[in-house]
Amino acid sequence: MTDATKEAAVTPAQPEPALLVLEDGRTFRGEAYGARGRTVGEAVFCTGMTGYQETLTDPSYHRQVVVMTAPHIGNTGVNTTDMESRRIWVAGFVVRDPAIRPSSWRSQGDLGQALEQAGVVGISGIDTRALTRHLRDRGAMRVGVFSGEAAAAGPEELLRQVTEAPLMAGSALAAEVSTPEPYVVSPPDGVPTRFRVAALDLGIKGMTPAQLARRGIEVHVLPSRTSAQDLLELEPDGVFFSNGPGDPATAEHEVALLREVLDRRIPFFGICFGNQLLGRALGLGTYKLAFGHRGINQPVLDRTTGKVEVTSHNHGFAIAWPDGIPTDQPADTPYGPVRCDHVALNDDVVEGLSCVDVPAFSVQYHPEAAAGPHDAEYLFDRFVDLLERRTSTTTSPSPQES
Image 1 (cartoon, rainbow, N blue to C red):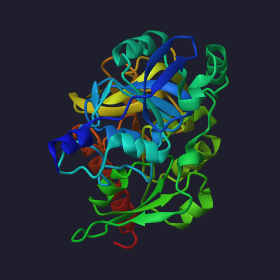
Image 2: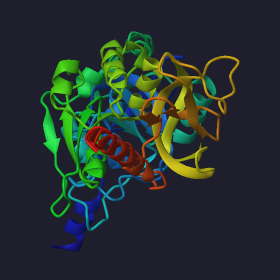
Image 3: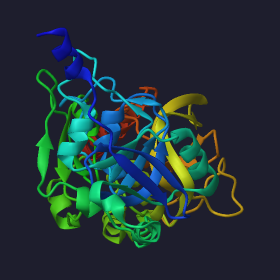
């Protein structure tokens, strides 16, 4: 290969113009990244410095256009190992400075090409810091990214397309990302099977059943519309509700299913969307945050241990604690008292629930940490403790037998 050929091999293609249009009329001009065309969704920002591939493949980002606050994205390329689901779910991707060429021994491809193959329209070369500040100050809002022929329409037409996009509030999206068929994740070789757990897939990430399986749990991953009868026929030792996209106020089927679980005192653990659904099953409300928590560097206080954890977040909704009751005091529910065991230190958002009279708890953040710190992995062990206590109770001989 000649020097001229080498130079041509690393020279990027001529950039194509792209336009980002927010629903309040503000625009950002940049360069097309990934697929060319049109996309609309909710504009949100993610503060993670790493883990962009896990972000892209997190089903909770379905119908959202993700703005990465870290300026350099794509440096380590993409690979099959770091995918958290079967596909890329983001509606669009916004970056400051994409890598021209990936540099990692784990890389199996280029991020821009992966986005193009997945049909994800993106934009690069814009001031993502200014865009993030705008979203922080004015809240998450609808957005459109346009390139190629789609960008040829006039500004009024582009803005119309953005404002006609559906709002995230009121959207029921779990069924759109859930597995169509049940499947089982078994413990790895050498780890004995101790428990069976029914995991409702509301947008589950691959690392979550893997974390459960490492602890000797046979995980039966079920579609979001699974009936109570089908779930109970598995005779699970516990039930898990995953993360997922959309407004928890729309999840009436899932909340009713969870109440069936609570009525039978089956141990329950929920993450993210599952946390919000536990709150609603207990009679608490939920509300939409101004711009949400998205990133892998969010501080949370675990009130049961008094420790501060750095945690991974991706949520735009939160639990509304009852008016007049401080979050450090329990609230009464039809299932007995519930405690706010975890609280966000940046804004005092409720980040975890623990029931006193029924074996159920949940957290708003992601202890599976893909990507992110591993400070909260112990929560999977806490779930195992619940399973062990129930098993020991149900297998203990009665006084007549002993």
